[in-house]
Length: 219
Image (cartoon, rainbow, N blue to C red; front, side):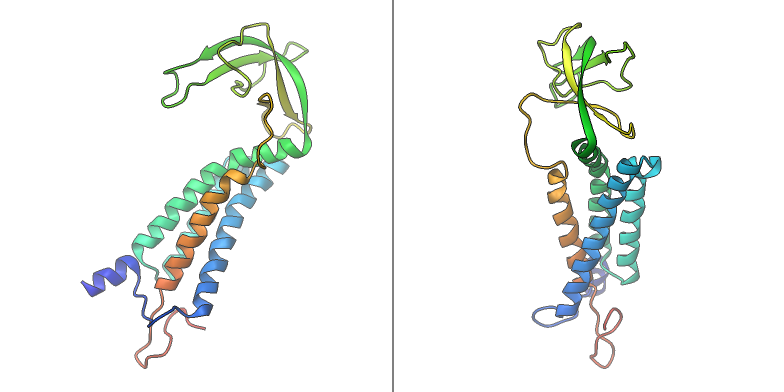
């Protein structure tokens, strides 16, 4: 049972508080992993790199973080938890990165609604309406707009849409009176959970050598 517990959750071979250097190592690893996941999405959206803006780069970073925990022989369950948190962050980062790009260099223009669909029951758990629209030159938008599109919206109405001045990300609708926290604010919970999970995994990976000195992973 002790061997099974050590394999699943990590040996945690220390008495009292864990070594400070080990906690710092786990904190740095978690921050580096989270920063890489979010950073690749932001860089992909800013420079228009398809493999990064779609979250694929973030997935690679999450896999690299899980591999690092496997190398230091962290508990299998904790590696799995960190991997899941990393994947979730990688999936959440691209929309936030797009919002950041539009907030920094976007321009707002009016578009004309050509079709409205959606409403209750269309998307499970969400009561959203989606508007197809065309710009002032009559060219249809490549994406449907849901921000600012509501139950009372009808074809022929105008919506405010924010465009990327360099055309590297898709446009978004502008919600009336929307002035909340920054685009990356919603990632805070995922980042914190990933950093804490990584730190716990590294700390619990601590092993003592046969002589009682720090084993694998020691300074």
